[in-house]
Amino acid sequence: MKFGVAVPNCCEGLIYPVGLSNHRSIVDLAVKAEELGFDSAWGNDHISTQRYIKEFSKDPPNFFEPLITHAFIAQATGKLKMGTGIVALPYRDPVILAKQVSTLDTLSGGRIILGLGTGAYREEFMAIHPSWAYEERGDLMDEAIEALRILLTKPTASYDGKFIKFNQIEMYPKPKQKSLPLWMGGNSSRVLRRTGKIGDGWLPACLTPDQVRSGVSKIHEHARKSHRDSSRIEIGPQYMVSIGSSREEASRKFKRSLSYKHLVSLQKTTLKGQSPDSYERANLIDSPSGLVEHIDALEKAGVTYLPALILMASSYEGIVEQATRFAKEVIPSF
Image (cartoon, rainbow, N blue to C red):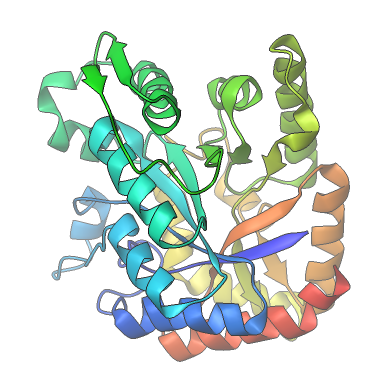
């Protein structure tokens, strides 16, 4: 089992208080994570303030672009891998994204994992691409992933799709990694199918062990139909982490956090079909010994990586305290 931490590059208002994100809480946290023995640091992707944040915050959140953020982290660390959890692919031009990722992977020495998803908030997509307001983002995702694969691997790349078109692009350097990992973000059946057919990893959010087990089974089924070796697909769900001296203490901290409000805001998208009562069961909210039991159950369900752990706190010092406890009291069991 491998473990990674989520850095707060696009988390203000959503997970952490507005004003928390800066060089210290992003880059220094990644450096600390490497010192503590975590495998990776992950950044997420937002462009514009969500409507529900505007309802309770007079100050706009700072959202730091994940690939530029990872360039700073790469310079400050030596072996820590850097993942995107996720890059919202429908927001971006795949040609420019391919160039950015190839450059970053080369200059970092092959340390990039590219997690891709539609984005949790359709309102952002509509603000960025109003002319595509009625398009299915999943269709755009499928084209963009195909286009990315071609750009990252072929000597000369061309693509002629409904949304994406380019011709005879010779793009170098290619990524340092022979096959740069592309992880598929999301919980839907379409994401499961996409992961089995073409993904290197699955990056869902807030799933119980039984839900993980069901998803893994479906991914393996899709992989077999596509004549792929499913054992090579990483299973890496993302969780929020609240560590307390007891489960009750951890639960109280979780329910007082901005994160809980964020999960409620995702009821119609990423967490469709899950009630607020399930959020605690579907995250890592417990004492260290309780977390060990929970993670053991996840591992038995098929999880191979806990890549972007969101540590519950309201300050940089609090995040570091949670990371340190997790590294010293949970990770050694695995």
